[in-house]
Amino acid sequence: MRTGVVALTLAVLVLAPLRAAHAQFSFDARRIGMGGVSLSRDGNVRRYNPAYRAVKNRSNITGAPKFSIPVPLGLIKFLKDHPLSQLSHDPTFTPESAAFNPVELMNLIFNPPIFYEVKAAPTPTNNVEFTIGKNQLIMNLGATRVLIPEDKFGLGTTSRLLDAGVGFAGFHVGVMGFLQYDVGFTLDSLLRRALTDTVVGFLPSTNYTILGDGVAQAGFAPTVSFATRVMRGTGGGTDDADDGVYVGVAGHYYMGGTYARGRGPAGFTTGNPIFGNTPLGILDDTLYTSNKPFGHGVGGDAGIAWITGPFEVGFGANDIGAELTWSDTKVQRIHYNPATDSVTTTLLNNHVQSKTKMPVTYIANAAMRMGTGTTVGGDVVNSGRGTAIHVGVEQRTGPFALRGGISRDQRKRVQFGWGGGLRLGPFGLDVGFWTHSNSLSPQRAITMATSISVY
Amino acid sequence: MKPFVTALLALAIAACGTGKAIFNVDAYSFMSGTGRDTIHYAIPPGGGTASTVQKINLPPGFGKSIVDSVRITTGNANLFNTGGTGSIGLGLFFAADSASTYTTPAALQVSPKAVSGVQGPVPVAITGDLSSTVNGLFTQQTVWIRIAAIGTNSGATPVTGKGVLTALVIRVVVEDRIF
Image (cartoon, rainbow over all chains, first blue to last red; front, top):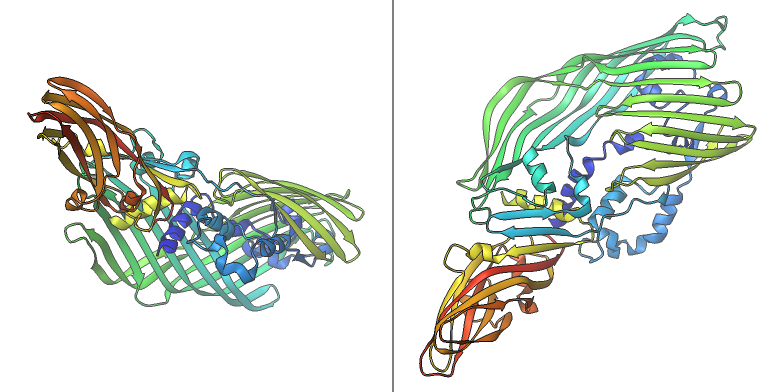
């Protein structure tokens, strides 16, 4: 029970600053060394921009390897520090242990120890002080006060879990599995002030609430897409040249399997005086759930890419106009009744129609490959909740490569990447360093990624 | 309600990592204005006690916590003697319910002050560590405190007067073992 609630609470804390960290995570040390930008024509650009289905992914041009194998130095260190044979007694995973630090555990979960952490973010260890009087409740969270979110916080993303099909003559017919969720919380201004103010704290007879708003939907979508080069470039139109303008479109018929949506406040009203009367709970949420599967709707992807000589630029967007209609939905009110100290669920409506939208996700990318062995690139990616910007450069000189980059993550914090590589024939060894803010700390950590590339 | 407050506290405690949770409980605020901040004493020859009892509410969710220490960090009272000659000391008793405060040993005893005739205010400082036997009480949602005026009387007439509490802050240091 305790562990579960602590984990949930910590997750809420973590989710505030950390938005889809996995979206920024890569096993490729090259990409990490360039601040997260990918100079190849696979990965993100192919996922978000259907025009890239028609563009050949030439590793000899992009300098990208066929694939990369991560060297998990961080995992080796982790297993050395936390032997599997002693895991059941390891204080890191044992809440009963006096040395157990829930913040450290959450940092571990949200920052998997695949790569070596050169500089770990410090785990907060300060004391929390409460001042309690008959009409007084003040929390002093110390330095960790900065973790109290000022704006809406949460977690959300749109994933395409499956994209299978067959292609011919630019057409692609298949089926796509999708999962979209977005869970957000907003602390009301009074609660935020009470948690951060060390003089007044909580007030009597005052409502303190967190507004929750979440939606989750999943299903599959038969898809037809088409991508082609609509205009050949100055390269003369030979098949070997990539120059030209490419466009791609995809149409989806969404068939939702299930969905749920909830919205409402949860909190409490302090007594008057605060510790003189029992506080009253506040919970008044509306929950929508699908009674039957097959919410349906249509939407599409569109993208364009322009390649001319060493320069290429592209833009692609997904799930444009995607709105699902659920023909049979149940609407319930979940309400806390202070008089009976119980939560009641009331059916407000049943077998009614409701609609959900898929958020539009997109990528804009650009790359310039200079003849001097220099490649510069950048992208702007929105995977459904917040935008990340990456800009990176790679300089190749003989077998050596130097890389650097800068990014703005979904927390709107600036991060840096740098690294290098050595290529020997069909193999290469790459090292990349990356600053990140994936931990429960206002300070950045530095990760060193290592990978072997096969060209 | 309780789960939300508990979760909120969990959030606060979680934020401290391996730090400790420290509660500064202003016990005086629970007594002030209720009359329970005043102990009227009439100590007969040979000695006796008079006391006041107060319930103190604490945040929920610390039932499994480990209390490191409990200390009175700020405590003051004034004695106003109206007659007789003797001494008045204070004793603090803690228990899970009102009745048990009369059967448990004192968690803290304050050295007695000599009083005689009409005298006062005689300041009394109440500070010190409480007996570790009461630590577990501070993980519960309520704790009862009894403050007793423990008097001696070597004369033939009662020692009368009152003790008025003016401040009492209890500092509880807890390992972050919530729930």
